[in-house]
Length: 599
Image (cartoon, rainbow, N blue to C red; front, top):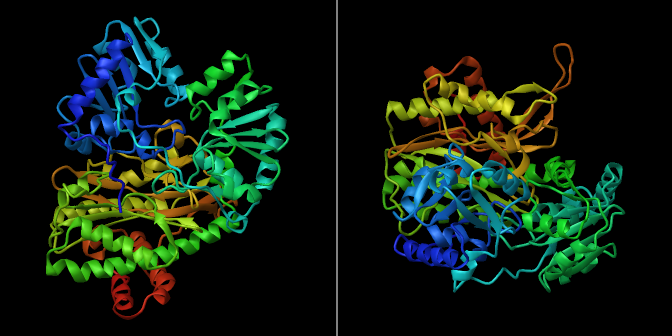
């Protein structure tokens, strides 16, 4: 049901694990060691064997890192996790607000001189270069070493061993051979002989394959080399790719993962690596063997983001299927809460059950967030047996969930009233809704990036002195990662600067969180498309909604809405009833009709 990270430390286990790591540091003459969330593939989610940050600190969020020194261990987390980290880590660890506090200055503040070690497999080229630049002249040095967490993690789980499988070209809209040929032409045009691929979702997209190495994300872990003639070498743990040999064809050679480093030493440059995702260890091997390196974006990232017509059609159907499952869940919730006895885990299990009842669910898209009352204020709250709370009438319930289907990935958040709530909750909910409406209605010129639109969704909250500490939206894959680059509605430079283009799928998810009281978030997925001509007919883009699930009308302060906002809500609900109504029957269909009634 949800990834628990069995190896994650408890508040009692964290201090002795930290002490063991410090002993290993001292034995190697290190004054510090860095423990990121990332693995060698730099994905957002990691296998249990790579959950080093959770094992050491107890923090299980999807982003963050720990800097361990002799006298302090800082756990760096962004605005999504500042409540969660305080609940999960022992007093031996010090939460640090990141990115407001940067690692380099923090190290300089806590260590006047010395050597900080890092595992070059779990830090990117860009991360290491930026940190070295920051520390230059400070008296602190960075040195690559083996992973010291692995050295003290005596019962570390084995790597995942699930087999890779083929993804139908009819669903992707392009054969793997065509993709390799297209990208190889781009490499030749740029004068690059080979692209080094380390992101599992890039490899999955390029070769039309999927895997089960990472919970919730159907990616195959491995490495690949794409040559400028369109041939490819895939490096995977032994046996994992045996079943897809015919699918891959003669131009893709499968090799053992242990052969990857040796293959790097034999390359003819220039070799293209993406400094934002390539492990420092790869760059070190290439440099040691005098192979010319070019820093450029992973060649798969941008074309993967531009969905084909087949992918858009598939994800449209997936959202209709998923929307019907969500509506059955919301109907069930309205019927069940008043009777009492319902808990967060009960709701999570019920929602997954409704999705599985479709007969098409491959997996949930991420661990379901189901936060009742104060838990809703924990942006990425994950219910456990220890935190499981009752869902009681008269509070807000935040449910953020999604499904992985062979034809698409869904991600939807609804905030619900479990009974009459106060005026303050309704006022905040309405401002969040106004932000979602404003961004959903946006028309914008070609060349506009996500950062240019992020503030549209925040403006209604800003007017009341409110805001939220996460991006307004992220890219989403098609039966791939639920968080996908390079685009996003965010001020973060890593994704917010990318111009939006037709075919990109993103979430629209403004929110508001009051610690200790309630949380509010509303989320639909949208696809960027050409806007109908108007004005002087200059090229414009707009956002087409993919998600069709009612918004809780009980939480809307109708008097605070403009006529245009009221019209948008009524039209959205009318379209939801038209799209989903035929997929429901009986009481669930009646519930949907009432939920979609005009304001």
